[in-house]
Length: 85
Image 1 (cartoon, helix red, strand yellow):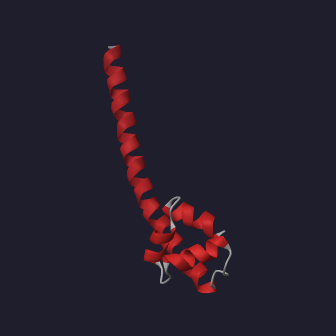
Image 2 (tube, one colour):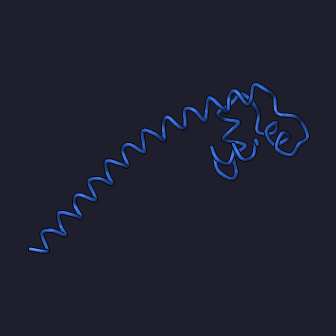
Image 3 (cartoon, helix red, strand yellow):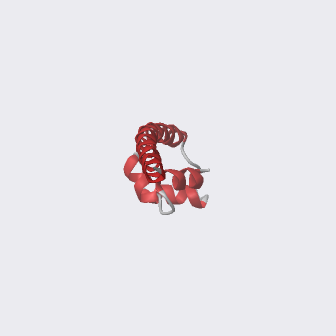
């Protein structure tokens, strides 16, 4: 599960970015993903906090994108109707 969460939050090479955002080292994260050591419970709490913040950021960006797409659609409709006359 740590690999799936890491890749969703940071991309394929996630351990150094995950380490940067948490209090754990990149090496520790690599040990957990390899199964050498169990993931500490506190790490799940930290990852939940990070995921919640990312969702907040993405929701804001999604609202901005929706506004831009609405403007694009309106512009296309305006151009389409002006060429019909």
